[in-house]
Amino acid sequence: MSSSRLEAPLTAFARAVRVTDERLFVELTDGREISAPLTWYPRLRHARPQERANWELVGRGDGIHWPALDEDISVEGLLAGRKSGESKQSFETWLTTRAQRRG
Image 1 (cartoon, helix red, strand yellow):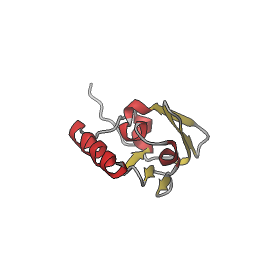
Image 2 (tube, helix red, strand yellow):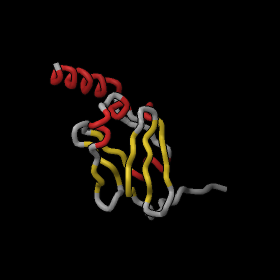
Image 3 (cartoon, helix red, strand yellow):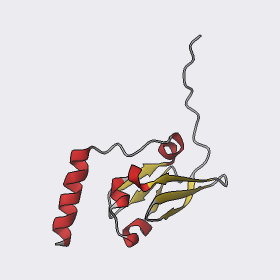
Image 4 (cartoon, one colour):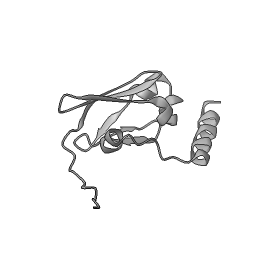
């Protein structure tokens, strides 16, 4: 017997976001709070607290965007347990560019 995965429509959306030094917490509109380790999202892990706190919701809360970090995380991805898909080379380029802007 084979089964195929059915894509269910997203029924819960992000309402609030909190980022600590270790975890990303997202409060959903259905009352749940989900979290993921920052090791999954290197840009958030390397961000300053004020950059982590500067987020905005995408659409109805389908995702979260951090403008200063050029980071986007979808609620669907969080619920599925997906880590950042950014390549090591892309992340290293971002780190280098970030250091040059600071320096």
